[in-house]
Length: 120
Image (cartoon, rainbow, N blue to C red):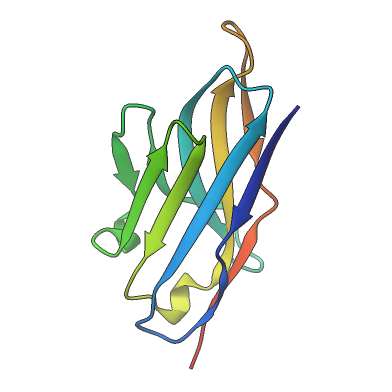
């Protein structure tokens, strides 16, 4: 069994910063891609940023230059530093990990979500 536990959400004012963390634990052979998704009320879940095991990164256009995704492979943890936050960044943020539980078995896992609210 694999668990992803997120932390770091909260309420901040526009222009502020937050750092999200997501730690994976359990029966993990290797974590491939880790990413952050967002879901606003009534909207679909969209990719915000992703990072491969080799540290190649991808960002959604609206967050380029403001968000930074990073990971610590030794700790099975992914981070997302979010700067210059805007009200439109308000959403629930979910961690995702594509990982191998064995050398041959690859699965996707989701965290429980952490709420980010940007308001004055």
